[in-house]
Image (cartoon, rainbow, N blue to C red; front, top):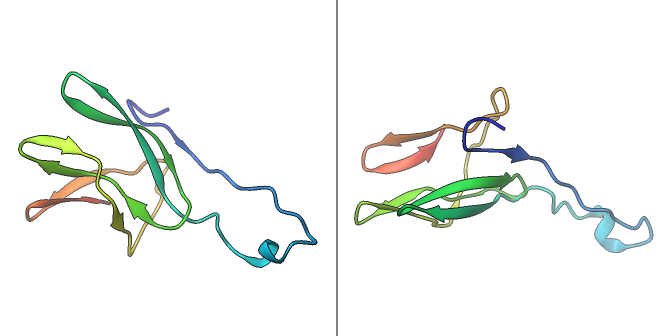
Length: 90
């Protein structure tokens, strides 16, 4: 756990006899948030097929879905930075 964030990688068990065994569905991002004191805090991020949550509306952080075009993992941490007027993961 790094501060308020904890990151885990999850995979699914697959049957070798199933056609779905060839399908790669381990690569999407899921995030759950915990609401406390008017702030949404990400408690878990799952790396599965590139989607992200981190936007601000009316001065409040809300969960929003985006397609990630580039995602990199450095020392087990994702850092949200602000470029222009939107939050991005770097």
